[in-house]
Image (cartoon, rainbow, N blue to C red):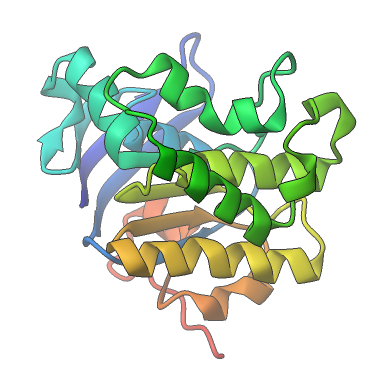
Length: 229
């Protein structure tokens, strides 16, 4: 599902630089990534999503080299196959929660809204605890409620790859469990791959594989962290 080789990336103007020797994640894996703030974990997710591109090296996703694939094809893949849960939510203030969840269907012609889409939206919202908030705009939502709206938007089209950037960071302990259950259950049902950046080490036993980003950047032979349930 994801294959990275000899990746280098630097933001315009220099400063921050990211180098990763190798990373491979198989279809259906559920992987957590831990590491210090500012180390580049979010940048890595953006590179995998095709929102940023490497200076050198390769990032292959869905069997395609993002750097060598036409942008329109990358956009189509992202719309159809990928669900991205952004750390800052990425909600549009002028839209209701329901309209925010449906927004990809409004702007991506490859996504076709059907009665099943709306039924599944209602099911997701109920599980996430926001069914009675769908008429509200983001300014009337708490941080945790905004996060749950963003998560429902990312999961609505049943993506094959879920990239979660601190998806439970704004949630209380009970809702963390509910939301992580939701993400992992949908992934298990659809065979989706999950790559989740988190600072919450209490969640790590929920993942079969945990990668320490410090080792990943250093090119260590082993990047997996042993986690006890």
